[in-house]
Length: 129
Image 1: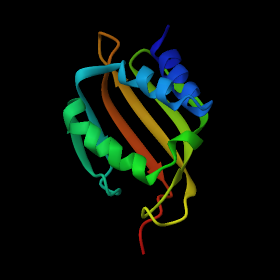
Image 2 (image 1 turned 180 degrees about the vertical axis):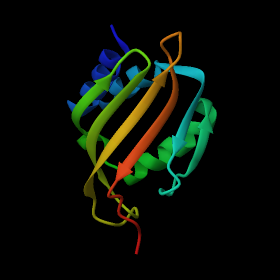
Image 3 (image 1 turned 90 degrees about the vertical axis):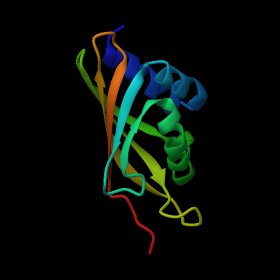
Image 4 (image 1 turned 30 degrees about the vertical axis):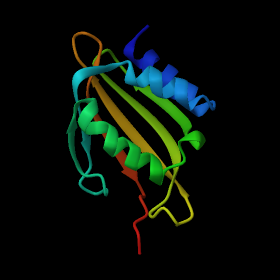
């Protein structure tokens, strides 16, 4: 299975309602020293290396989204780079009404076919008033 097919499988599982299986499939692809580069335009700005650093950030992101309503648009890529495009409901604050935003998430795979780096790009992210 190609890296594009693996990401597509993970995102399709999540989009079809099996978030736990989709997330587990994604987590199984990470290299131990992977890095997630969160945009400085989001409240989660920074670089997070490895699961220990990234999980608290990921849990914070989950509080602002409704991951069970992820809608996969397309997955593109080759052996080294894969991009998943999807929409997801986003809440600027935990009390605000969610609005659907577009996300492009880029994955770079290493020579062991493990995810080495991730760049999530959030479009139209509403901010708190």
